[in-house]
Length: 542
Image (cartoon, rainbow, N blue to C red; front, side):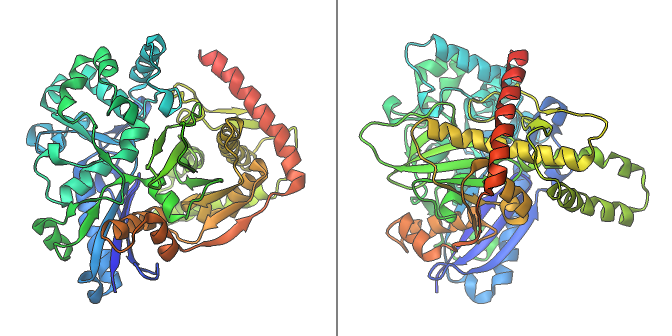
């Protein structure tokens, strides 16, 4: 009986899932937090700096894989045939010629610039603007396949920023690798970064790779910074989708995990793209992975002429399902908005010395806010907020934007503000859905995945009402890891296609939300106010 392992490297932790390839049964699961990240080492939220040390990934991976396999039972270890990897992105890191992150070297061990620059790191807003300005002056639109706007969350902006502020890192870096590319390279024993198989998902959505450029636009990049083309040996000219094998486990990592060295490791990809596969994506449905942020994915059949959608996070053939166009959008903050509000009103708890009492109150805040907010019916004159606490990813990326809470008066209480923030995140989701529809891509419904989708019926019902669309919630708690396990099974040769793996290993849906017609009408009016408020704020920012 064969099994595969899905590794889902999230923002705060690694989730490991062991899956029976023939039935889709999830036989082992484990979660390991990133210890350095948990203490916010190497982060400076005021400066929008969020860095993660590669040792966090290694420690979490060793712990979680072994724990998940222990949970699955001894017989499973000898029957594992593949490992799939998904990560956040764009989360790149400078590496040496051997593919080792610079932060693994003694001289760079405590240097945040030598670590992985997490997707939510927005220190490169000025560099992103520089890329956008250079593209406006170019005769060729090099951003047409990434929605027309380059984001500070992405690959080249982060490299350009680091070049400007840290000469030692710039000189020591042989190239930069995405997190989803480094993990498969690491555990297959890679020693020459030129042999690494880069992900088409990461390269196409964040690094300007496209077949029309035979890789990435070298002339455009050299105009930004000649040092960028020092990576010319491997400027992403060869990229691979995730049903392709990146190699087999090295003897060292096979021993660390207690697995056979014959285990195949699939080429990596971003979490939401593999999550869409784990959630059984299909044309016409918007797959929405909802957690601290969101990533929204759609797929379309291969067309003779590529269909361009403005203001999204890229469209790449094979980035989700081989043979289909994958389209990505997303929100820079979703659950993070709720977490911010919780932290804000939690401030007085810092004065309570009784740790048991503090934890009891802390744990009750979001459930109680949800209960109180759910009892307040929406009205057309309700307060309106903007969900741009971490900038706006799409449509039309702009990391300079800030969140807004408007309509405050002396009668407004915490549940009403929480309700407004939930509605704001759902309005942000609607702006993405509307952009796809406006560009001629019908959105029939939503496939909701991730922690918020599984845990909050309140948020999901409001989302259905705001979108005026049905929402299917994936039955698996770990759809990203499940998608990675599906790719692993395909790369290992168990299935002839990812679609077959989805059919055999998919868990289906266990909750369906339908829009409430009365609330749909109210939310249509509130959404228009959200859009008007957003337009006003953008004018002020400009």
